[in-house]
Image (cartoon, rainbow, N blue to C red; front, side, top):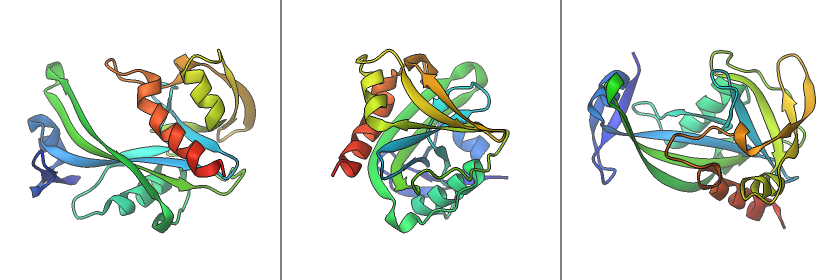
Length: 200
């Protein structure tokens, strides 16, 4: 059974509970949103296996006793099969996330730690966790931001799957968002951070 450290709303640790208890009772906990980029200014989105939509490079819960950087390393390894040096991972922001699904007795209260880290240019040796991820899409961050700001209708990207590598078109509808979100709010800040970090 998976256990998570729990916190009050000021991020003071108060204990540890099972993942099911955390979500049943709406307890505050930590998650990690992992973003990979390369020196050419590309960002890497995973393709979610359940929705076929683009999401973080990898993401998940920070387990009990685990640091945020350790969770970054583990999630990247588990979901896309890449070993990464997290000592150079850059913290971007902490998002206070709240979502309720009363019909499922599920309540999410998470401090979502957003970090980015560099992937070697043109890296393609991915190994996907098939229940979570069906592929990776590499998009130029500037082009992606233009798309989400409605300055373009589509952008070219490279999609890596276990079978092949293809050039594809991406539209705004390809990004995963919750019902109360829009894509530019969800992904715009990380795109701007990568652009600033690589545009030197």
